[in-house]
Image (tube, rainbow, N blue to C red; front, side, top):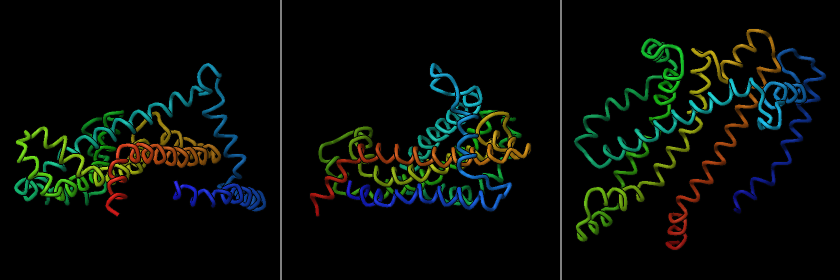
Amino acid sequence: MSGFLARARWYWLLPVAAVLWEVATRRAEAVYFPPPTAIVARLYELWFSGPPAGLFLTQEAVHDLLPSLGRLFAGWALAATVGVALGLAMGRSRTLAALAEPLLHFGRSVPPSALLPVFLLLFKIGTPMQVAAIVYGVVWPVLINAMDGGRTVDRRYLETGQVFRLGAGTRLVRIILPAAAPKIFAGLRLSVSLALIMMVISELYGSTEGIGHRMLEAQSQFDIPAMWAGIVLLGVLGVLLNVAFLAVERRVLSWHVSARGDAA
C-alpha cells in the first residue's frame, strides 16, 4: 500500500502532461500528431459511443476489441500452461534440462515476428495463426522463470515430503509449485505485456479484424486520430492488465509476503 501511495503522489503529472501535449500540438498544427482531445473524441466515436444496452460498445468495438482480447487471453493462457509445465519439468530433471536447454535458448533467440510467415503458411490468416504467434512470443519468460523456480526449491521441503511419503502429485502441488510460485509469477507478469505486443503484431501482419488491423487500416486511410486512438487504447489496456495481474499476484502470493515479513 505504501508503494502505491508513493507512486500516486506523482499522478498529478498526467493531466499536466496532457495539457502540455494539447497546447504543443495545437500550436505546431502537425498533421501526424493530433491533440489529445481529438484522439479521445475519435476513440469514443469508434468504440464507445454505442447504446447503453450494449455497454456503450459500438459495432466496431465488437468487431475489433472482443476478438483481440479473446486471442490475447487464449494465447497467454496456453503459453502460461505450456511454459509452467515444461519449465517445472526441466527444473526438476537435469537430464531433460541438458537435452532441451540448447533448443530453448535457440528458440527464444528467434524474433517472433520473423516467424509470422511460417505461422501464416501453417495456419493461414485467422485466429489460429495469431494465437500461435502470441504463444510463441509469450512462452519463453514463463518457461525460463518456471525452470529457475523448479531448480531452486529448498531441499529441506523435498526431504520433509519424503519423510511423510508424499506421492509425486502431492509433492508437486503442495511443495514444488508453492516454492516456485514467486518466480513463476515474475515470468507471467512479463508475459502479459509481451502478449499484448504479439497480439498487435499478428493483427498487423495477417488479420481482417482486431485493434492492430484497425490501426493499419486507419494509417492507410490517413485517419491519424483513429491511429492514435488505437495506440492510446493499447496503452490503457496494458495498464489495466498490469494492475489486474498485480492484484491477483498479491492475493495468490500473500502467504509469501507474510513469510518474508516474519523472517525479517
